[in-house]
Image (cartoon, rainbow, N blue to C red):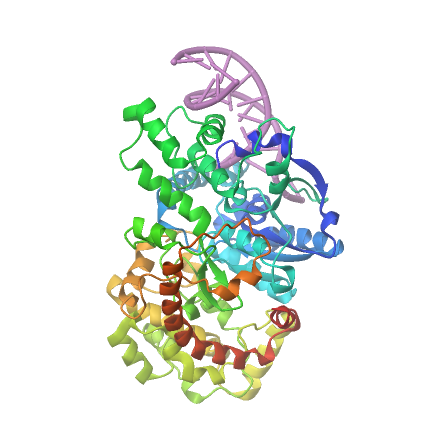
Length: 563
DNA sequence: ACACGGTCGAAAT
DNA sequence: TCGACCGTGT
């Protein structure tokens, strides 16, 4: 994971820190690393999906650390991984195969009665599932902890947040185990934080500015640093045989230009260099520089840095390797935890916690036979559904649900035990419909429409909507980018292909000018035109989103007030 | 000096 | 599973 040997190489630059250094500041957390560690204490219970408290041990682990940060007056901002981007798909499938093998072995040990051996194997097979993340999200909501689900890589989202001013929702440091964060340009990362809050910090400016530390980066900048990282081997591209972090550093220091480095490698390594290495290399670099992230203020996807026109051209306008595009309202639904980013399906169980301000209409509680449930669950309005069936994902989601938005009370329902109680009360008091049915029907209109959108576009996949319990633990993790790619290709008819999300307004948001933006003027003007289209189309969504913000719980409200 | 393959112990309670 | 560490080969 991450950049091969980068942390070892940067050892001279790591400094022990305690998180109290960041008292009063906002600090980002890579949710995956803590989820993964937390899962060790309950790996078997998670896999067997056994009843009882122990299965939820990983939540306790996570919240302990959150409370540690809070105790030190730090505002934690938890960032989750979203969908996987195409370049990474290969690695993930491999990992899944190995996990599966370990799980099967573990089950055999268990049958033999060897519990200890089984646990050991279950631990090797640990995987962080969407449902685990989702349960954690609900806990974070109830504890008023800020969080966001990245459209793709959490690392990229964290780097983006690191580039914002604190008053605009930015963060001052990131807690993670992943060296990729440095390649993404995070100015300061805390690695290996223990339960007392001790960790090892790398501050990228210190790396670039230090005059007497051994591997010298004095003439480096962010771009050269990324080149070095990709040369050394990253998750998106393995290194050329014989090239490790040290050689990568030497080559980049010497030539200070990646094209020269690549041509030198071609002549010295010859056949060892794959034919498409240069292209793959540039794609990998582009992921680190221009990754797709979610802009909370604008409620849509953007690129971390604007894509210069020439770069876009060099890829032939094809930038799906940064992750397929997603409509603003879907991106928002993902970021806020309403939509599973890998399956693009609504989280039905949790959404059923939705508290309606007014009594639900009879239509919403229409009783349905079980076999009917998939259809009816996602169809509150037959007319809308019909349109979806015809147009599939062709329509941007906001168009479809905009008229419904006024009814949606809040996207940020709090899932504490208290609200659970409220829900039960309201269910039984406002209607006489059995709770079982209510649980199925009582969910967010918005998310329902969104999932309907997805559902109808996937009808040809002939795939059943699976409930969370079915999906866990047997279901293959569907990180397959093709689903989403499909969505996108249908959608592109309404959106321009040469799209850049970042407008001029963004520039004041950037805390650091390390993001050397050297876009040509003409590419910029062209993009502004594209942005007009974008802005025009987002307006509706924005207005409706504002309307729904009335009932948001204070922390989230404060967050938005700050921006 | 470096890359790279192998082994070992730690992740949690 | 993943990093840290070590021996070997280039």
